[in-house]
Image 1 (tube, rainbow, N blue to C red):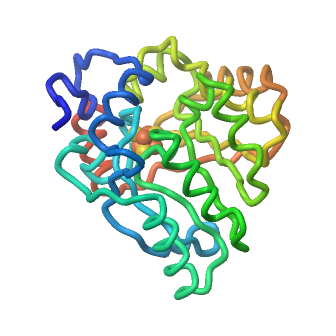
Image 2: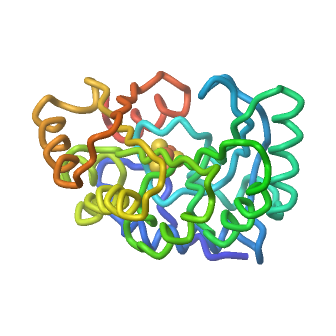
Amino acid sequence: MADVKDYPRYVTPGFIPFSPVELAEKTEAIVGLGDQRKYTHFYCTGVYGGISTAYTVGCCLRCVFCWVDWSRDFPEKYGFFCSPEKVSTYLLLNARKSKVKKLRISGGEPTLLFHHLLKILVLLREEDYLFILETNGILLGKDEDLVKELVPFPNLYVRVSIKAGTPYSFEKKTGAKKEYFYLPFQCIENLKKHGLNFHVAVMSDKHLMSVEEKRYFLKELKKTGYKGFLEEERCEPYPHSVARLRFAGWE
Ligand code: SF4
């Protein structure tokens, strides 16, 4: 049983900022077992025009607007271990049943337990489906070698989601130390450098991001040389988002 003493849960006033890289490792110890990872359910949803989804457990950030259920904060209490074979089978079965052509892992950060993700991608490589990798960019920014390992998958598309526009705001909104703000931007540079197909999303909801913060964000984004589509995310009043915002004192 992994040690959950001092494991960061949700952000509250006075929360001590953490290293998201260390939190990734701590979380991997909880949600990983050999080549297996914890998941809570498998389903199809209408986003991206219809996508088969594996809902996994565990993330390395603690975004105050996160819609994911409490499995993010208490990963030791939720989910069941699934092998890469089981995950790819469930993804394909649901996709065929609902006649959709896209697959993804959601609910947690898919780049945790990277060897598990790679095995899934290998199993799906010959299938006629697009795999959308939704990431917060922390680990792909920290380690360029991980990005290199994604190059051989032509049916892979990456969506990098930036959570805040300044280092200070990043710490306040994600619970992670402000010096890690730059990793998702490094992720964009790494993806560009290695020719992956991707686009950038940003949580720019006007209730969460000021005009000045957005300006700073756009300046940082420009430095990466990114000129593609920018998806602007809105904060929806999902029950877990509302609860986390309240716990963090955002109302
Ligand atoms: S919004 Fe995404 S990156 Fe942020 S805590 Fe939730 S799952 Fe993790």
